[in-house]
Length: 497
Image 1 (cartoon, one colour):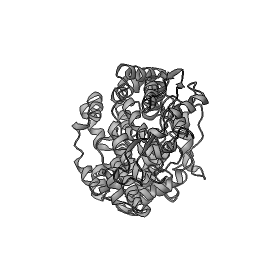
Image 2 (image 1 turned 60 degrees about the horizontal axis):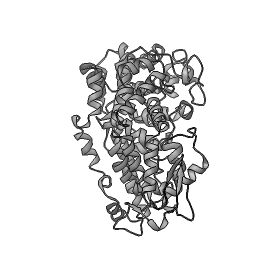
Image 3 (image 1 turned 135 degrees about the vertical axis):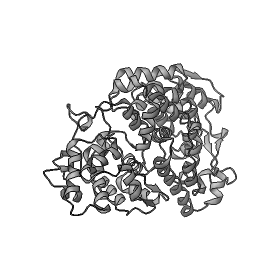
Image 4 (image 1 turned 90 degrees about the vertical axis):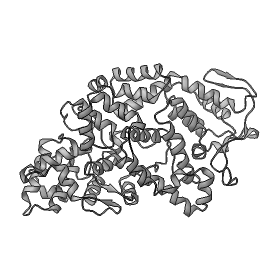
C-alpha cells in the first residue's frame, strides 16, 4: 500500500488496490470471477501460463522457439528435461528419499519428526520455483489437493513423505486408476482418514466417504449413505504398520482379523462373502470404471488448467481422451492443453486468480531468485494461508476465486519483503534482474517490468502507475527499481494468470 501511495492516487486509480480490506472485487457478469479485462488472445502465452507455476522469460522464449506442440510434449516427457540443478538443491533434504522404517529410525521423537515435515514442505517450494519440469509440478500440486492429507496429523508428519514420493509423484503422469489404488494402499491416507481403525464390529466411514465424495464419483453421483457404509465394510482391515512395528513402519498391512467377511453390495454390485482384501479391490475397480469418476476428475483437471468454468467442448475432449487411453493422465492433459482447447476456453478472457503459493512462485521465477533454503518462504506461505500440506479438511486447498480474493494484503507484504531481501534463504541478484529487464532507459522501466513479469499483459494503467513511481524518484537506483517491481507484482493484473 505504501508503494501504491508513492505512485500517486491519480496514477493508480485501480479498483482492486483501492479496497481497504485488500480484496479483489466480487464476481460480476461482465467480468467472470472478478477477473480484470481480457489480455491479448495468445494461445501460446496461455499455454506457458497454464503449464507453469509462473511466467518466466526463458520458458516463454523456449515456447516461442519450438512451438505449441513441441513445448507441450517436452513438458509431458520428463526424461527429456534435465533437472540436475534442482536435484542438487533437494540433496540437502535427506529425509525425502527415506523409506518408512528409515524415517522412523532417523526421526523417532515428535520434535525430530518436524524436521522431516519441514523438509518436505521446503522441497515443494524448491520444486515450484526451480524445477524445469513445470507441468509435472503443476499436476503434482493438483493431485496433492485431490488426495489431500493434513501433514501435521500425528504419524503423517513422517508418512506424508512416503506418500508424496511413492503415490502422488510416482503416479502423477500415469493412469488415474493406478494413482487411486496407490492412495488406497497409502499408510498416510489410512492414518489421515482413520481407516486403520476400520474394524468389522466398528466400521469407520471416514475413508469410504471421502473415497466416494472427493477421490472419485462426487457428492452428486447418486450413491447413498448405505453405499458409504458398505464401502467401509469392504475396506475394513486395510491398515498399516505403525510405531509399534518400527521395522515395517509406514508400510501397508492387511489385517484379516479386522475385516468384515460377510457379503456386501456397493452401487448395485454384489460382493460375495469371504473375499477378504479383494473386497476393497473390487470397489476400486468399480469406481475406476465408473463414468462419474471420469467426468468429475476431467472437469477438475479442466478447471485447474484452463478456466473456472471450462467449456463443454473441452470437457468432451478430456473425457474422450480418458476413455481412449484408460484414464491416462498424460493423454487427458494433451487434450486439455491442445490449441483447439485453448481457443475454446479463451483463458485470456477467463483468467484465474493465482493462489498464494502460485503468486509466490511466479514472482520468484520471474525475477530469477535463487532459493537456497526454502524455510523462510515456508513461513511466508504460512502467513498468506497456503503452506504446502497444511489444509486440515480432506478436500484440499480450494481452486476458486472466492477462497483467495480477500488476501491481497499478505501478497503485497510478501512481494515487498521479497524484493527488499528480507526473506531468509532467498537471494535476489540485481545484475540478473537488469539482464531480464534488458537494461531499459528510465522512461521504459514500467514496460520492461511488465515484460519480465507477465510477457507484457498488465493493463496500461498499471504499467503507467509503475512508471509514474519510477519517474517520481529523485534518483534511479536499485532501491527504486526493486520497489517498482514489488509495486507491479502488487497490481491487480499480476494476481491473475
